[in-house]
Length: 215
Image 1 (cartoon, rainbow, N blue to C red):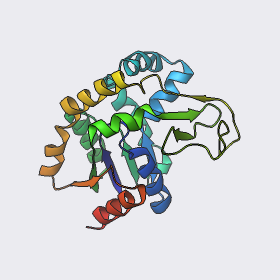
Image 2: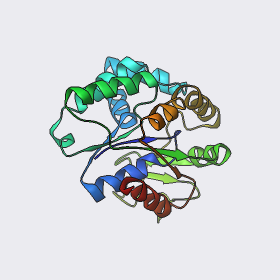
Image 3: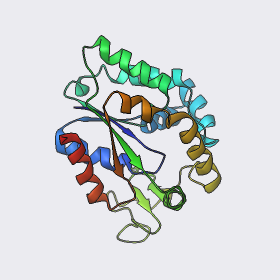
Image 4: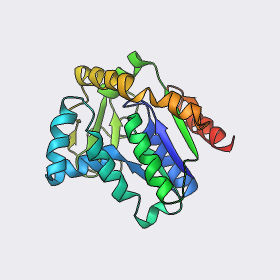
């Protein structure tokens, strides 16, 4: 299977991508994770992406396409993959179609994560991560079992992404509406698009996705 997850930041794509990876043995490709790794490494691409993401804006197409193109050639993608955060524009979708066509492949399904934007702002602004292992938590929905101690590694230092604040979130949502939302009719016309209620319980969202993949 070759799956694309579409939805605004914080809609739960990463969580569901992890579940799909475990259930189906697929490679999970998150452009956000790859770009943040480049930022930590201080590469030229990372420095460019860092400034852009801090403003809550989308990283330029050519940067993202180059990263994805290289990643899709790696061995773990041979059995299938999940794309989380790519494509974000019609130009990126066309580039992805071209990359897959060259390999004699095509997408299986595109899953749209539908959200309530007001509730989403509250969801994102409450997120924080363990500095040591990057485990994700939330102030109200998913706190560590012991306050101040990471469940996964026992770390005691946490951080928030610089763009996880209300102002940057609204910029990111606006960018999604303007640049990514046009992907919906693009994939609907291809007969690939299925929608799920991303504000529902995590298990229910998983069930809806599995139903969409089986349809």
